[in-house]
Amino acid sequence: MISSPIRILGIDPGLRRTGWGVLDVEGNRLMFVGCGSVETREGIALASRLLAIHEGLGRVLDEFRPAEAAIEQTFVNKDGVATLKLGQARGVAMLAPAMFGIEVSEYAPNQVKKTVVGAGHADKTQIQAMLKILLPKADPKSADAADALAIAITHAHHRGAAALRRKVAGA
Image 1: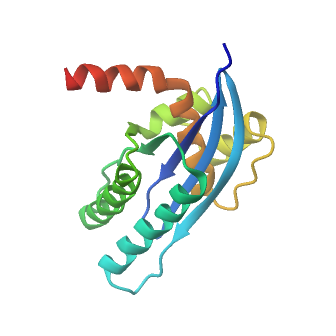
Image 2: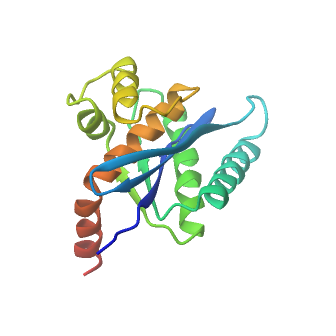
């Protein structure tokens, strides 16, 4: 029986810069496909920034046609306004794949770090070092794109459990 690779889109949401990373997974093999970020300009209306995120991710979805998507869960910080804006960007980032009929799995930041690096409190340099090992052809130009690839890797490793959780929740 020949299986075909599953294409996964990882999304690292942010109002200033939303990272995206695409990889194919076949069994335990990870293959880099592409990565980048959708950037918005500070100083323009929030609605316009959210629209830019939506349109940018729409172009990524249209070009790469992933079968599955994953996004990082929002962490709450002391700045309530910043957390709310991040939540709005995250909502738009979840909406884009949903409009393509793609279910979106969510992963906590510590789970992403633990999956990729082996430690739940790893820093960005450790994540980027592991990405070079796991996806040697990847060359993310921003930390957001690197984080998005880490989210996609996390989903590749946990997609069976995520599907089971969705099935149980829908029962």
